[in-house]
Image 1 (cartoon, rainbow, N blue to C red):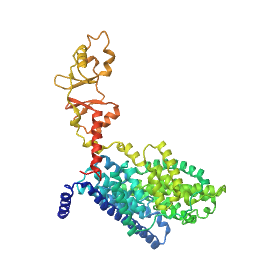
Image 2 (image 1 turned 180 degrees about the vertical axis):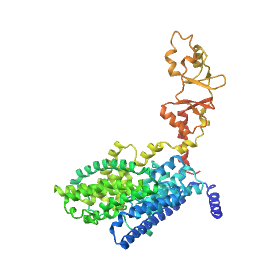
Image 3 (image 1 turned 180 degrees about the horizontal axis):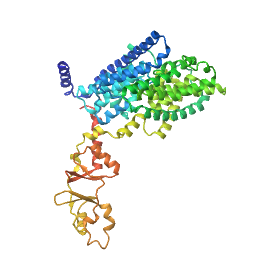
Image 4 (image 1 turned 90 degrees about the vertical axis):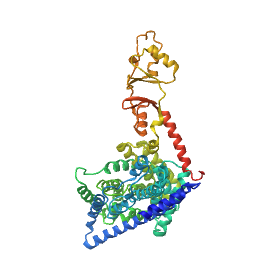
Length: 595
């Protein structure tokens, strides 16, 4: 530990005096991309190890039905690890990253750099019906955040490195560097600027290089000769269905991921939820794990794979039964995912969304092909369906388009990808203003995407309080107050007691109608005084002050210290200070601006 601190001290002493120290962020993005890529490869190997263990257990016991209990074992081991070893310090889900960006200056607990790898491999590797993308995003983000903390970087620079780590993780898992960058820009940062784009691009490319060197397999392989213009009406139909499907996925996931069987302890929930999940998988085997194997088989045109180990294998010879089976997979996959996560497993909804979208596209093409009206490419519709579902659920159409294009090699499908993704996004936005991650943060934790809490909290409220004011007394004649109005420019005045305590306020707009009243000689300030809708305490956080202004739709409020009036605070002054801080932050982070 002593040598680590010495290394950090030496590096910081080198970089801080540099005339262009911002280039240090580039070096760190390479490091974060390297570690993020290694983490993604490690996660893949861990999952393969757990899958092999599951197959070995099943083979030794010679009972295929053991697969009913493997998901329960995986979820139980995950819960044991989280509770007994990790001590519940793990922060699950992409929503936790967004919360840390907004409320914790992009600081993420160090144990998240490895705990997601262990817990998600136990869950998914033993059959949990969820994805690995959220865990690797959380791992990469934690790597970037802790790299920034190690070198004492600013909150904004830590945010960039956090996003760079997430980009590297996504890029390495999918071998898709552009999608990795776009994911962080659309989901985590919500902005596209050169100072943020370059580190993300470098980290993403580094992560892909590491993944290709150590694990070069492409996730999906799509053979296509392009798309037919005559299929355009059905792509439009798929876009509409994908939008509605996205709303369904969001609602089910949001409900189930909050937890199932909450009145029981965590171990009972894990076992009960795992057995329920196993029973569903026993009836619908393609729901086992991520489900990518079945997606690839169907992309190859091998629909027989859906019959493997299924109760319905005999019935699935009939096209109508196959249609119903595929429709059931579309509707039940997210339910299985919700049970996996709600009972204590660790994973994400990214892969289940892709699975659901793929089989929605397959369902549309399969039904049309059975009618005989025309022949549609099932592989094309599966690929485009994945993009449609992702676009609607994540509210990230660019990520969806480039991710599917990169992982399938289906760049010839760009037009259908664009059409379906755009339609799905528009329809999903009509029902849900925010994506599934922000929905939870807004409803449960009152964290909003359009507020930069970290920067607001860095503003000193004391510097915004206007202390140049004229106070009034309750018994002051209204005619005397008019003289004060004539000499001042304020539109709000504080009414105080003799010892300076705030009694109320007088709004110029409220008394304007009385100013020309002939009979005001007997009125006093106390007659027109009102209680302010809110009073700001001088120690109140700036974020809370902004929330008060927004909730009341006001522009000026009184400030007190222990009940004593000390001045007014203006929303316009607060916004102006925030704007100046934002401009300075982007200047400081600009990689090509000299210090």
